[in-house]
Length: 269
Ligand SMILES: C[S@@+](CC[C@H](N)C(=O)[O-])C[C@H]1O[C@@H](n2cnc3c(N)ncnc32)[C@H](O)[C@@H]1O
Image (tube, rainbow, N blue to C red):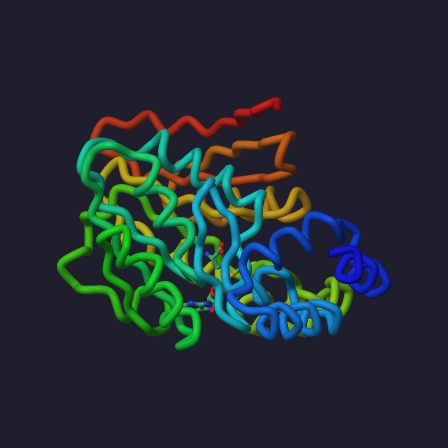
């Protein structure tokens, strides 16, 4: 074990002991373990080496190249779970590994109708494993395009953790993301909001009256995100978690008689 820790530490792994424990407990054979240590020491993300990531207390399968669900995104799932009523219809757009939808379903006792979609075939293959376990369906294609038309106007909760890194800032990301996650999972265009604007523009068509769109964003992008939501007819609200350093914008499609008040809520952890 100490040999592995030394090797990982030399490769720059800050939590070398914890990582060594995870590698040892996941490897099936000594040869498997040696190969995993080599891959980690070469700079692959730990989750890609293990083949899974922990998210909301679940083990989510994550294949090579697929976006690793981030701890901060657990806040988006918590906010979504608080908004989803009984037997909610949930769509996870830009689903990556499918972690968000799978975690939302796992957090509830009642039945949820889950649909997820992504443009990247590798993500879709991976999401099928995670989302099938949650009883959901996964589709491949550009944003809403592959979803069944029957979902229009019926979606209660629309999760969309879209790529939101401005193109020029991709080069500043840690190598684990920059090199080992697909560009399409990170690049949000010139100001980082290109995909988000497309999601928001069509959201009122898919949301049920009173339904909610939830996106994660950065502090820097929050005011433009709120403006975009309001411009597309959604009532915006910002939720912040200090504990997870996460910002979520929630847009509600007005229901008949809705007063349309925007707001901010902060979860101090
Ligand atoms: C930041 S990752 C988030 C993945 C997952 N939601 C999560 O939080 O772990 C963004 C995802 O959006 C997908 N994506 C990017 N552009 C897309 C598009 N036009 N249509 C569908 N999916 C897209 C990428 O393939 C990637 O899986």
